[in-house]
Image (cartoon, rainbow, N blue to C red):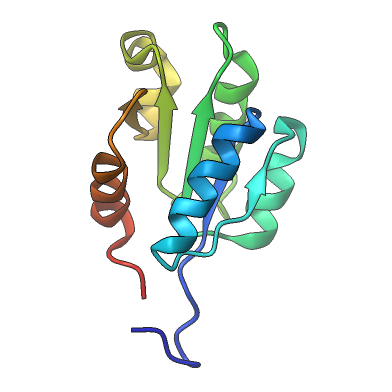
Length: 131
């Protein structure tokens, strides 16, 4: 239950696919999470460090996601963002699990396509139910 003293938890969604990003944001809003959307990967770090969300949901859309893993590295190397959990959504989970920084950064990997219940369960496991 939301009260004036308990702001809703925020999840920053980093997703360059605008349609997918809007869909996930609508779903998160239905579950009472604040959900800033960043569709420009180059601005993601600034948004995350400013918002200080409870969770980052990172969609890996590119076949060779160098910039996405650089973002993860940057977040983990900054003491202000290092503890924010990251869920990585990808169509290639095997490659993501082989990415050295994914394991070091403690990212949770979610294979696309996924069921909404799977996403909700991972979010709750990371930050608890919406408040």
